[in-house]
Image (cartoon, rainbow, N blue to C red; front, top):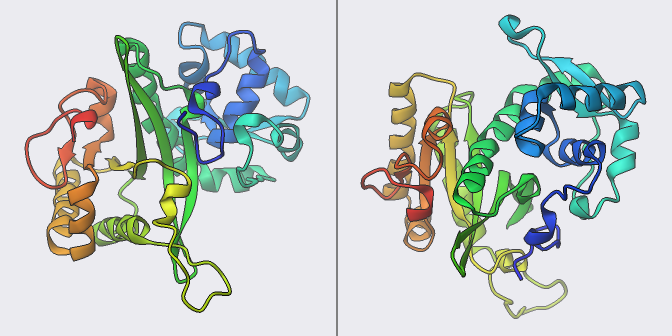
Length: 304
């Protein structure tokens, strides 16, 4: 059975209708760090009303388990992002879905506001995959998307993926389990810094942890095998700029694949792709909107 980095089987991480919605909300905020009311509705109860989630959130706020911060966009001043208070974080830290996850305390609205733009963008990238899975009869839910997953890459350094996704394609009796590292780019860093992320993924692909205290340590294989039976594909989701600028950033990612020997080696073994966030929101991730970083025509992410 496929297992998540936290050790829980992916099939066990789907929310159960029998669970109280308030517990699902707390779990979602603990895992995803922060979300708007609309995002929580799409994630947990896509067929329900916004008012249902609002009532649950306001009750949790009145009991001190969640709080909110206004979104920075002045045009959406009535929209807020919800997050756990320290009391809410303590309440959820022993939930099975969160086992092995590092603590993520937010102690003030100011601290929460600093995290808001990127965190909500990562949640926003998750929602089209969940909607696609529901439409296609595949398996991918709120607990199959784990933000901020860290892996060692040697020399005391770590790679922190914006998210790790587990997704099961269901075709009759055939089930295909897919995994992906997801990087969400809001065009807040230089294009070169974004492309350097590919080098970090290539380093993780090759990195072998060495046992301590041996002069000539025996290799146990790549370190990523501790978490994944196959190395996850790497997906870049871009937003926050004009179409022309985003296309240029994708071209820079393709150039890194073509020019860097480690990344070129990774690309021969691992599917690599990039997409504009608005395109998967409009057409779904299964649309022909993903650009292979090795070149070729746009295609669904499953066909990279």
